[in-house]
Image (cartoon, rainbow, N blue to C red; front, top):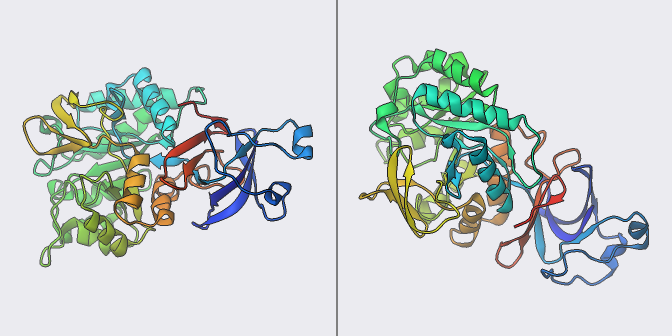
Length: 409
């Protein structure tokens, strides 16, 4: 397969006219189009009935499929490292069918690698969920499904003060032996474990004990600046949904946000659905951290991809109206109902984040954060042939390819 005439998002984080060659589910080549036979013809807009262009004589002899990406950006498959569910299913349902539903829907949206987040639940329930995910990850799957590349454990070692939509009945102090049992149950699939350092007096030792085996995040925490800095100095390297479920940053009390700013090794998740973080604050975050340290996430619930209504999240009722999901009868945000692709579009079109920067935060950065950059996150030779064709006018998804196979909407 070849993808031609598109503006390709390169590993240098810019767009260039390139021709992509795919073989056996991997990117085999990325070459300039200036001197190619296809470049001699005038570019024409991609239409729904015109996804396959006329091949050159050489390509025709090879019986090779040619994808004409005229009028499109060709970008790496997106990677969501923090979402809970979609289409009525949740990773915490603990079934292979639930994971499969997540994987199929996300792939259809252009998210080709997923690292779902667990909720705060009983420890043994979490172990069962992790065992199920590990079993699923080791199976052969339909090419229409996103790859399950990790699990992000948002709880249970969090703060009751900043619990948000998490169920406080299952919040417990951090316990290294419990952390190790999670890693064992998941067979290494857990990539991030969160904690609230202010709730755990031994947090420095706890972090130091596991930081070489799993990334430690500050999650649902009410920590002040000094405590957060101490956690980062001990080896924590990640912040769950910056600004949400943490104290606000002020001029005399910079809190977790200020500590993230001052810790160059820390990467921070950011929800750009238009509800969780004001556009001005999103822009400020990019100015403060740079696109090198921000990871766009969706934090989507099982309501994602469905209409308005009421559903259950971690044993609690959640009401969905449009793009807003709140705990029933309150104004407490319970998560999001937009895909990562929609968040990317919102960040660019409504918040003024340059596309090149936003894309880095939805592809390269998440892959680097969870240690899978050698296989995902950029269009480079040898990596999974996961890519998305975005319309240059409105950033809508025109085509998705997973391991070189077209995803069917």
